[in-house]
Image: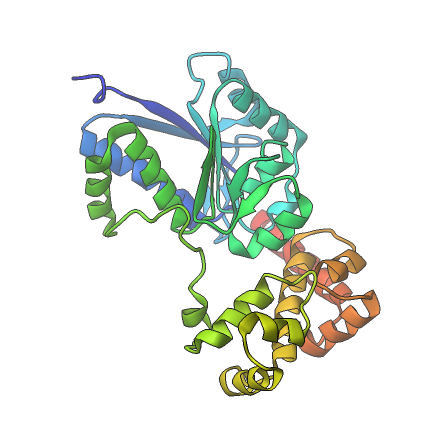
Length: 339
């Protein structure tokens, strides 16, 4: 065998409770297929958890761990030291904050081990202080809360980001793209193409491809002017633009914008703008512990009372009730897993 053929890489997948199964299985299976195509165990991996016990994913499937955090910390100084650690998480990642895990991740990184995350795992890396001033990716649904909690991280709505020895991906099938990129770095494009054929996927997406469907497909809107106005609105949620500013930016009159939104969106531009600001607020309420008044300010409301009034009108419950219901749902889910 030549040098390329005997290259090996070992990985640790650290499973956080409620991790998402799709990105986890896509990553592991990409490595399995790579080994099969190469004809030897180029990639080895083990699954770790905080206590070495089974971890339940968000879909309720439990996955057995091979090692505990304590064992992984000992491995760092021996022959079982991994080449890469990937944090696998999913829903409710904001509830997971373990100082020992944070210290272990920092130690891994400082010892030259590549550290990464799948789905919402960037949240855990950020808690460990590894993403300050670094580019990273996280699932679009968690991006509002993440950017508010960790303003020093350069977070993007990309499929995945690689910044030096830090690998983060947005989850879902983006895990496949990031792992194919890793295999490509190790063994070249030919192997990546063969793995794609096994996965029945026709290409490796660019890391900067968008996570969500384009606005045209997501909203079912074809009018280019309306789409450009919506993009302008989505880019200015904390400090909302006036209709005059929007009109100037779009090169239309206020009356034209009003007519277009009535035709295409079934409501006024002011109403639509309010709804997307409240949608962002809802994400912040369920993903963060920000006080309600701070959520209101982050979404462009001048007072908590006005925010609460608008929120109740749209969602038929107050921001406080939204947060309380979320906590109750989470507690019920944890009890179901424990049972």
